[in-house]
Length: 243
Length: 319
Image (cartoon, rainbow over all chains, first blue to last red; front, side, top):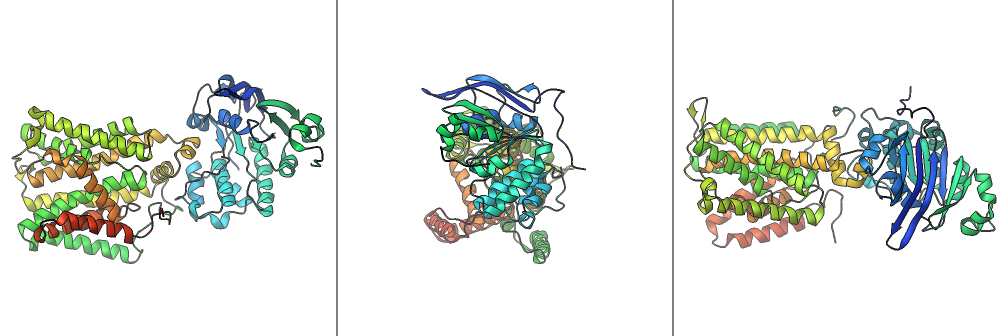
């Protein structure tokens, strides 16, 4: 039986962020951003470059301190907890530029995530990485590093999984495997995916939140988002045909 | 802790082939055991020092090669252990165990302090901080004459005793050899376990490690304390071998020597720094017998060794 992360208190969302604001000097990167992640769903986070997506992920993961607003994980207020405490509380993340431990093999990445491997070995099998288990990550291509990082984080069995552009740099075959792996992870955790590949994201997300100039301009099911004139104007373009 | 089952050795780079390794280790141990029986006293004395430096270099390799922090103040841990052992021998007890306990604990404490103060730094910032740390320790040794003997250091150590028996050069050689073997075995075993993965993860990517729940600062403090324990023990034995300890054992040039030893031998493995220390010390000793300006040749040899060495553990040179 696949092990499970600790359940949230009854009624509490896996992650709840409210009123997040962040300034960098005179530029406001986030304006009163709120979002909620529920276990068993995938939230897509989209927007043009500079919209504040990575800043928002940084705030959620504890690498960027917000100027206003708060984040709860499984009902517990995270306050100013750093990345380590958030990880121990059940928040797993990958980075826009994949970060792996170059000298460690993929198997060691998984065992480092959890002594029993958590969901890591299952994820590596679904991502087609079994033949790379005993190779050091320093020898991996960009795409493989991205997937290896996902296996490492999956091993931690996070309550919430934040993925920063997981499909960037992947081949079509790797993207199909990523899609399958995320569908397998969906019932086990709450996933937030920042992604520019709309075909990939709209195919897998249950809900989409759109950021522009640091604020939420739309949120809802993919079909609604694609049809939203404000979203088409700000990001997708008038000629976009997706889903 | 999860045993190494199904894991590959994280410290495997540079490891001896499986079939020849045990035979080679047995041969080295046999030669080491036979040495006191056939070699003259001066050579035994020199080899005891070589083994102390070898243990010190392995402790340095733990920090530089495994943890990824290049310390320019590691002599403070070795020399600090030597001072602690010497002070105990001169003021409290001539017991070898007491002296080594003092040396090891003092070295561990110095390593922990270095980690607590500097462990949030990395790269050049850590190196400069460790240089300053070593400089301050050297200044204390020079200035606090009532305890440290000032610029003269602590001299006239008696031969230590173990179970009531006075230990001579051969016994001290055996102590240095035992410490080196235990350090080699212990570090290799540690690095093959989950603790080794954690240390390597912190070395490879501290932010990724922290985002995976690893206490990066605590790992650095613990590793520096462990390294200090080994360096302090080695320093303690060396104080008994030499019979004295001076501030030069603490200063930046001594830290530079152990860095050279480790780099020449190769910091990616546990064995490399030990071999580097053996080669460096014996080469320096031989050169000093025949050349007045032997340090010039030593420097050129070091540059050649670095240029001709295998590429680093990630398979790249800088240029």
